[in-house]
Amino acid sequence: MKRRGSVFILLMISTLIFSGCGNTMTVEDSPAPNRTSVKNQGEVWKNLIEEAETPEGEDTSKNKKDVLLGSGEGSPELISTYFDNSKYMNDGSTLYFQCFGNHILTTEASGQKYPKLSETLKAMADEEERVFKEEVVDNDREAQDFAKQMEGENGGGAYYSRYAEDFVKRVDDKCLSIVRITNGFMGGAHPDYSYETYNIDVATGKLVSLSSVVSDKEKLDEILIKKLEEEYSDVEFFGLEDSLKDYRMDMVLSGEDQEGNVVYAYDFTLDPDGVSFYFSPYGISPYVYGDQVVKILYDEEPELFTGKYAVEGAYISYITELDNKCGINGKAEKIHIARDDYDESGAFGTLIIEKGAASLEIKETDCFNQTSFIVHTASGKDYLYSFANMIDDLRKLYVTELGSGGPVQVKPQEELYYNYRDYYDAESSMYGVYLPVYPEDMDLSIRCDLLSTYSAYAKFEAGSDGIPVQKDKYLTIPEDLFVLTSKAALDTPEVDEEGNVKDKDKPLHIAMGEDYTLYRTDGKGIVDAKLSDGKIVRLEVSEELPHKINGVISEDKLFDGMHYAG
Image (tube, rainbow, N blue to C red; front, side):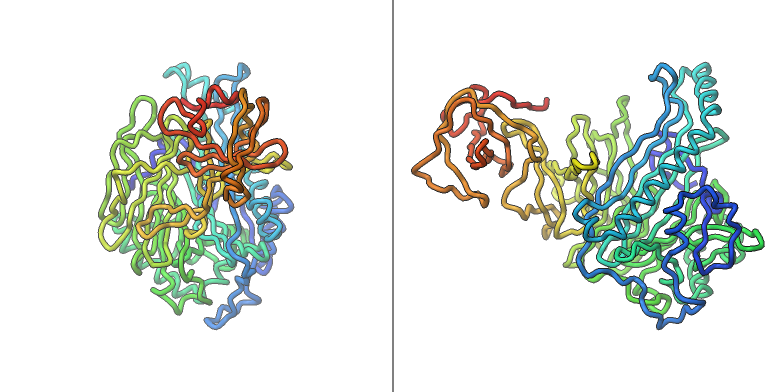
């Protein structure tokens, strides 16, 4: 049996949506389906699926025009938000149904630029939460009974669960491709999971069917069978030729034909380097063999595809904790992330990065979870960025080069403390994090301990060695995060918006009682703050302890309102 990501084992989570057993829907030009199977779908989501982007008629010729129009305005900004609909016993302390996940959405600014894409992502989020809430309601009593039974047998800790995580496989001005891994434990002999995929034209907001991408189903199935048999030689398939006959290219989700027969949509993502196909447990093989993932590179089978979808230049593609196939040096390589050496607190001591048959073990990580993505630079190099959470909310960044040999850690002697940039929209009260989506323009933050502890953000790009390089001159401190009140007067330079000192010989005299709003920092020893009249002043913080401001006064004698972590 294939190794699974440890998060699935630890959380005991699995899916109810096996291939062909989940939400069903067909696209508009398919034979009239049995609509009773979709009567409970949210109306916005139902309409979106029915209006999916498909070729007209049955024409799937190799010369068909690319339907992914794109806007030509650059990659959308994406954020990841978190939702939690978990249920607890009456005392509010005993978990009996864990239900949570994340949503991929656009930022407010990007939503104005790509309104259709924003609407589609919002509809996806609403539909996911609606389905999850229904699962909780429908299985509420069984979940409570199970939790009580297990508490009596082993002291508790076992519960029903429903969990999903979305991974961005590609985003640019043409397409956003997302793979969702849905999990759930609802009693039974074992936990289960499955893949769901969504390919969205960013200009129209419509879901893209495989028939818009692939020109020949017969040829596709031949290639899939060959790759599956070669790459999963230990798997006993149900019968690949017969299984794949039931798959339809003109459907975006599995459903029924007008005779009531179940037909399946291919689960695929339109990656920067090729098309990945995902087969969930029970899809084409028994559960014991797990999932199967196959990638066909665009350059590998150019006649199979209807248009040139490969990304020219740099891109970022997120990877799951299951198997991933990524184009490395013109070859579809298996990339897998695992964790080992857990302690009693749940932290893992070893991060394992596998590339094909080779592997790299990064020791003494002492982290609780990690998120990884491929960074393909404009020069053609491939790196793996792995962000790992530490116990004190710090994030370590591990950078691994994925060259022609095995994975090699970049600068292992250096501690790299980068994090995702936080996102907050005051109007909607929406919290989340920016997702890096382009190697030359990544939103990242760095923890700083200057006049308080905070994460300050800037634009970064992947350097020649893969390590992020700050593009902005300064790190921006989140707006109004820290307002310090002075306990003493201070003479300090005024600076302009670009950070230039206005008059070195005439510092501002700032009276006691003034509020200093921390504004930006170089992350080393300079902090600029805004005064109540809008002026920006420069504060130089000494490295030695106790910190002194401008070399003349201790920070704790100058300010009230500082907050340091740890």
